[in-house]
Image (cartoon, rainbow, N blue to C red; front, side, top):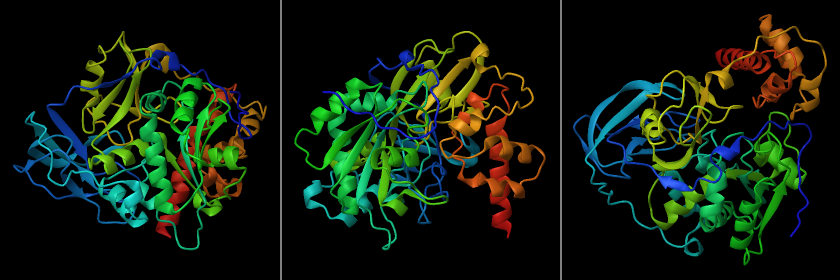
Length: 441
């Protein structure tokens, strides 16, 4: 069957580098002896620890309470004893963490039990299950899923989209999920659709994953309200606003959210987490992580317990190959560089990218030649060269005239720039300065 492939204006075509791990089936990682579980693994307010040193905890037991609406509870990912509750380094910065020593028994908490069938659950019950399971976006941003499913009354939602694009180079976790767990992807989508009371669902998959498209198509054979949409393999196709535009033709306004055009977007991995929470009652205690790159001996897609140190995960992939140049959580375009491999995997760890010195080398920037390639490919229709120029001069307020806060930080401008200007880096600085000033005022 041939599909018409949809896309958006702008974007780039970086090498995919997915051949490292796209054929590697998901493996269950070794259970960690010690887990470091941060209380901040999501966008929004951090959780408050509700256990103390010496407490015995069980797998799936809530150990971090979400006190704010934009937050998500945290659960024990092993059974064992709480050894420390203290600030520690995490992939996103220093945060309060709970360190648990595993007893190796995996004793499951009494509250972990199946929640029933979608058909029998109300929309409110589904949202509550998702909230209590601590489910956040699995694509990397980590936005609490129950918040997305609770739009204001004046925002009428008519469409749910699952993001299976996985446009970031190197990463293959979502690809493997769609191949190996297509029924759970569809089950999770149906739960999300019921949670917001809509009858139309889409699963967007890039056309460089024909096997995933075929697997999901087979899984939706009897689903009249769900459609698979083939997308042109282009970066950043996985950005939710680009995805909405490609699939529905709708444009999210400047400063707006997907709900402003009646759409909610979730990742395929998030849908699987929702399915697990309903079918087994197990909260989000593990996720699939792609471990890949030029400086790893055996690239893999591992099902990893949250809180497992990067170092342990890398050792399970044969360790480092050659000299390590850079360690990144996520992909090369939007990932976060790490200064140590002793930080833990968190809910948003979609990948661990291990690059050698050559691949990690940052070229020396040359003066801008005004070629406007960054303007041509910007998926948000910004003018990166002018925003960057103002930022480098410290003129942060003036960057707002060029809609600096609309930048999605995809890095396409830096990638395409022939002079290798630090476009993304300087724009990020400007965004942070503008946001900080607004908060103070």
